[in-house]
Length: 131
Image 1 (cartoon, rainbow, N blue to C red):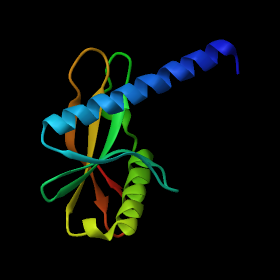
Image 2: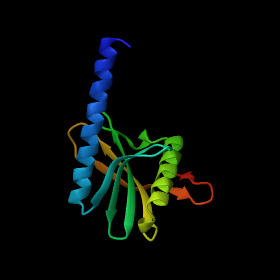
Image 3: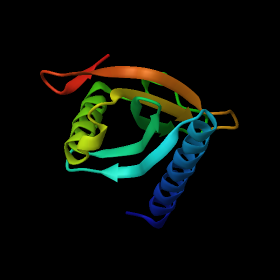
Image 4: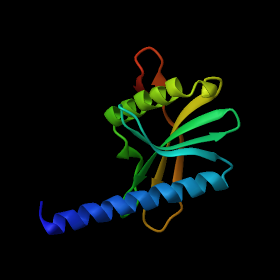
C-alpha cells in the first residue's frame, strides 16, 4: 500500500470517528443515553448502542465527505448488525424487556446528522434484516 493510500485511509477513519461522536452528541441532545460505542462482536461492530425510555437502539453511523445518503447501509450489512445486536442482547439479559430498534445516523459535510428511525427491522426467525 502506498504512503498516499495510507494517508487517505487514515483520513477516512478519522472522519468516521468524528461522525460517530457527532451522531452520539445528537442522540444525547435528543434524550438518548449512550450505553456503548464501537461495540465489537464476532458478527460485526455496532457503532452506537443507546437507550431512551423502554427502547434499546442499535445505531449504524454513516459518514461521507459530502454527506451520506440513505442507501449507505446495504442489506448484508444490516443483517450483520442484526446478528451483532442479538449477540449484545445474549450477553446482556437485563435489556431483554426493552423494545429493540435499528436506526441509521447520516453525517458529513456541514449539516446536522440525519436520524433515520427504525431504518430496518429484524426478522425474528432468521435473525436477518427486513427493509
